[in-house]
Length: 129
Image 1 (cartoon, rainbow, N blue to C red):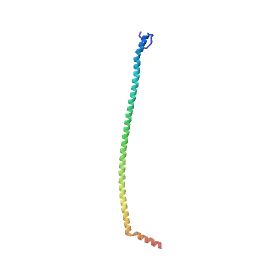
Image 2: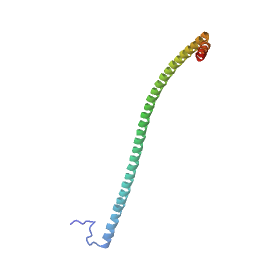
Image 3: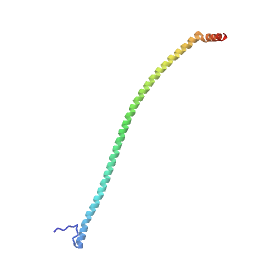
Image 4: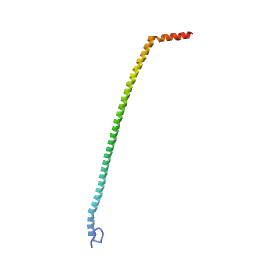
């Protein structure tokens, strides 16, 4: 018959202490295994957190790049709008100058015709009647 060292078979106390001594490395290796497992879990947790942070940095970089291209597009639109506004202001300035020239011509015609004096005389004569 085979003796099982884990089962108590009524062996003498020296044999039992021998079995207990044999179990010491087993328990030590079991505790060591638990410690190594715990350390492995901690290491994996660290790796996953690092990967997550790297992924988050990558996502933030992509978002920043997209925002930068949007800003570039908006700046081009703004530049085009400013150019159009500038052209419109130039045309308005030209119109203003032509209007001022026409008003000056009207003032010159009025002073050369002396319309003010004629109009006063006309209104005064109408009041007398």
